[in-house]
Length: 258
Image 1 (tube, one colour):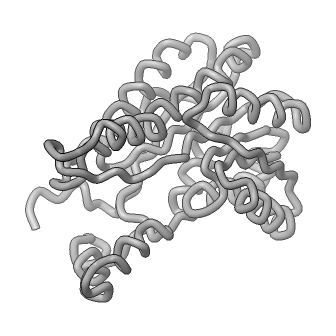
Image 2: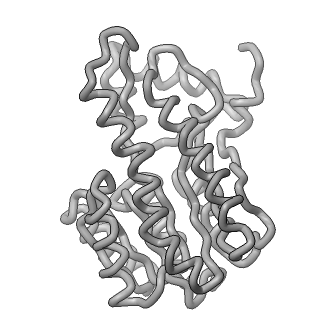
Image 3: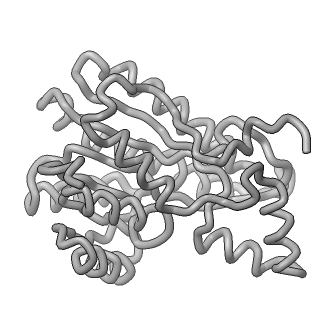
């Protein structure tokens, strides 16, 4: 408890899944949390739930991460209520899986607008204040797609590779100003998106079992397990971790051959 006491954190895509788990863990550890979410109603419900569970301070702000002005407005509203943003978690993302040669231009732009541009919009909204104060932590939620390729998932891994490049470049750029930029690469995590994918298959139970069979630990991860990694990176316990990526996948990406 209190590992993030007196810190103000903004989490994008915080209405559900990994984002909601991170916002909850941050509030439990003492941070005031801004839930920046495209669906305001979802964000408000989650913010109320978190406040009830943890007694923490929360604020829901409607945010479209593809729009620079929208992200800047979320930061400004958060600062108006809680003070300067100490921690940013760029969690908002979408899955765009296409055949490369039949993919539309709109599919390409939609993927990059959310999964890469959205991360950059978050970073550039908080970096001026962090650099001026000489302190801050940015945590980008990447993916094991950032360094592993699964056929049929184009162009998602291209955008996620870009997130790692952005993380490293900004981490080095502002290291001397005590602003740390890191990433987390989750593997299979049991979110609604994962359950929706299973349920969309011809045999959902078989699809779920096939996923579990691939995992060295014979289970997939929980959003809370990603969230506690984010707490660590956001806290003062990780002052010399910068421009790095922590993989949270139960060892799956270390497997060479099934």
